[in-house]
Image 1 (cartoon, rainbow, N blue to C red):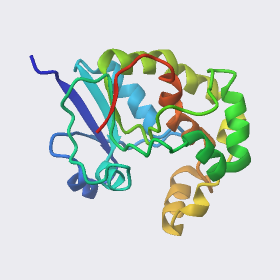
Image 2 (tube, rainbow, N blue to C red):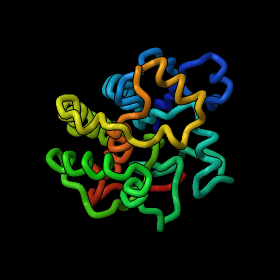
Image 3 (cartoon, rainbow, N blue to C red):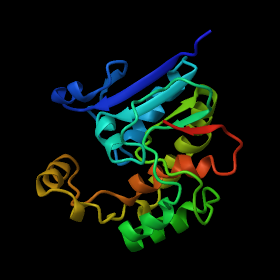
Length: 212
């Protein structure tokens, strides 16, 4: 029997629907939390009955164009536990790059996060923006055992809401839109720590991981 998949894509403006894959389940997100798509993941993944689950942004096609296998069509078939949808070069170092991009906010946040979860010196896999597919058991275990508790852990610690230095690399219009929605001048560092949380959680686990 063929496996089933719930492949969600998050969008927040109707004009973004045209960018979604035709097999995606559209999810219109009207509530922006400090944890971004992780809040949607916490809502959708525990309810899914499919064999495999993915929760991606409406920009997945564009992001795949920037990834290591930019010319490959998206193929979700095959035998795997986890499929990375925006793979990077094997030499890419996601923790080292985060230190370069976010500076002291990253260092302080990472040190605090180590009180919650063991973090290696570097990660085996670079998974950005939660652009992956995982089997139901793995994804639901991650959400219930790691992501939800981590968000709860972060919610009471101000270090996770320090400015990430992300705004300096974004167009002024986008920064202003974000400020209008949140009252913040910059994105919080917790977003970028959570972006790497799944890669941290799967480190040294015996999963079959493929690039797609």
